[in-house]
Length: 324
Image (cartoon, rainbow, N blue to C red; front, side, top):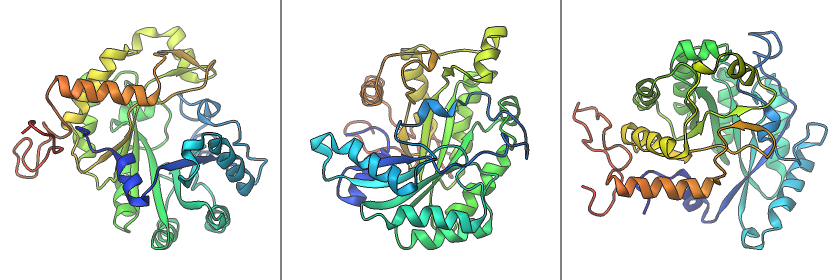
């Protein structure tokens, strides 16, 4: 049994099967790339580092889905799994509503696609877009995944996000209020953030109506502004060793409400992209290490979370035999 709220287990139970996301590149850009709110994009981002080979914007949405399904069908044990279309690259609501309807409509017309996951920025949604997703969510699975990255405005400015944390608060509330599954993405270890600042992200996220959360260790990726910053000012950075990061994740989980399911702890970039840290650990291996460390420390998600009563742990805590 997990000592944290595992979103993949929730999703598997919802679909009564294993669920696989198929990444799709729909040709979007970002407002901090095209000059609307800045240039150059986020300082840590090289989009090629997390886009599968079959994702090319010159291909249609349908072709990318077909190639993605064929890619995963190579593994016989996954032959009967459910598929979600995952619009991951750049800002996937940064267009007019008619264009969005065309793209997401094409994905949902595919007979093997059971829903969509849309990665976007909190400053790139409005009432019309959210109302459209709300209508879709009454017919199929919809998850809106916001790149929040940090709850500290100084950090957001340093990494060239082009929005503040309040934008994230407003977007998450507006999305969840419409009954749409709402996720957030946070990077642990951004330059200038102390351990207490990192852990305070959990406290702030607890106040949001989030369905799920993705955690991501800071990685220096080739071809990014941040990689150049590291070369000239390495003192700004603290890059975690594997065991150190595992303990940080456990500390984070202790302060995170178990009402927020955790989808991921780490990110993996293809060979040749990562400068450091490169731990050589796959996602499932890292999950095993986190579960082991939680057990070793006899702790669980939400143990130190402050409930509405003001009492730590009151009404919280994943049900773990012998842990209460």
